[in-house]
Amino acid sequence: MQQKIITMTQLALYDKHKGTADQNANDYFRHDYIYRKNLGTRFAVGFGGLIVLVLYLARAILIQGADVFELDFAGYLRDSIFFMLALLALYSLIGTIQGTREYYLVQKRLTRYLALVRQLERINERAANPPQRSQHESDNRSDTANTGTDTNHI
Image 1: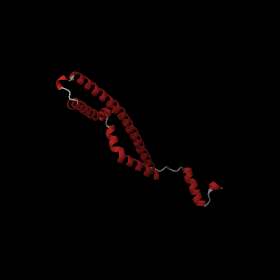
Image 2 (image 1 turned 120 degrees about the vertical axis):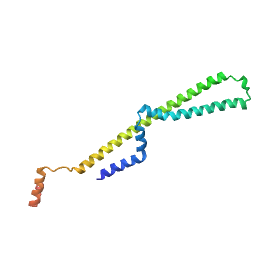
Image 3 (image 1 turned 45 degrees about the vertical axis):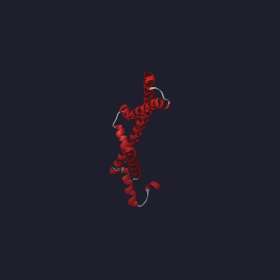
Image 4 (image 1 turned 180 degrees about the vertical axis):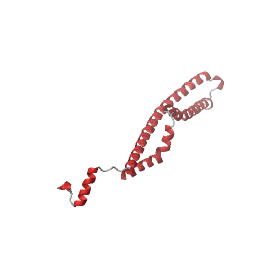
């Protein structure tokens, strides 16, 4: 009975803290999960990179007093594209590593959860079907009860 309570408590704690998120993550294949996790990161990094590039151009024009007509926009555009691609590649790599790690942790927790569920089922089966005593054990018990002596200690 104590093992059943411990197992049910572990299952309840998992359900409360990680269960819903892990079940949602398990609905995806690993590649799809990682892609979905990285998509938001890519948009955020791309938007942040554009802000940095606009601020860099604004600094050159407004603070340094560069003439708009004399700026090398082709060179600036080439450098900006290289910067954005490098930035996106770096954050995609970091996000892929992190997403892969998270996915495998989710799978590990779900495996443990399923093992706990199987353990609880075995506990319930044992409680519903207690082990049958053999005929020999039953005869020994009835002899001891009838004679008042324990034959095992003689």
